[in-house]
Length: 265
Ligand SMILES: C[S@@+](CC[C@H](N)C(=O)[O-])C[C@H]1O[C@@H](n2cnc3c(N)ncnc32)[C@H](O)[C@@H]1O
Image (tube, protein in one colour):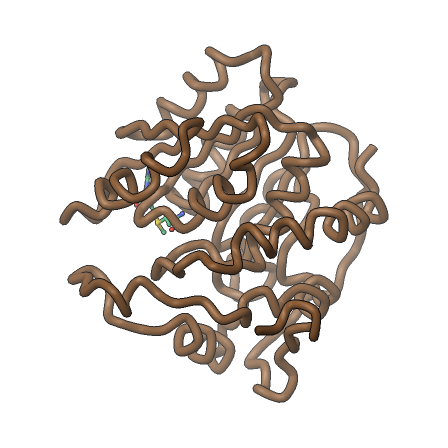
């Protein structure tokens, strides 16, 4: 059974290699944040995941975070997008990431249909999924289908936060963890403060305004909804249910988690 203690120990075991694999990545605007990727990668290790399936690629931040972590592991990755943004956004992620990761495969289309199909074709593998588009109700609908398969070990949802009304993952009985749990933010929130370049330094994207990661974080933390962009995790199997305290915002700058000496540069 996945207990909190095991989960916390696994985060620590995964931390150094996660930090090494992601510290030089260029941040893609609107993408998954670096403190959201750690629990995903920790559970990929814990459940010995063979296949990660992702819905909602966009510019590929989440794809890149996971693939750079699993690069030297026997983990396959299927990344699905319906290309809502158009303007070559999805194609730019394919062009950037495909040459770097031979075990990464992109699919174009609606994950409501495609995600269960990929699972159905891979019942012999340990599978996990990440849904970052569609969001909320439609994401839960897809997740419920995925959870019917015993070989699906866990799932994750972006924009799932306890506060701010985005606590939709509570609707799944299997809800295990949110990144806006207070202890998690205090211990690992610094992962977002490691200095990353942003895509906007190198590229002008008509879809989003130019912003640095620091500027985006500052705006988020200063707003009434600093936790938007949290990650929720569901477990398909036995796990310890706990009651947690969640962060609420705005969070004053002096209370932001500080990057530990070991990880500074
Ligand atoms: C916020 S973006 C994803 C960001 C990305 N995960 C990252 O970290 O950079 C949401 C994406 O979900 C995709 N999307 C929305 N609904 C979808 C669906 N039903 N099937 C597949 N992709 C979908 C959109 O095309 C969009 O590119």
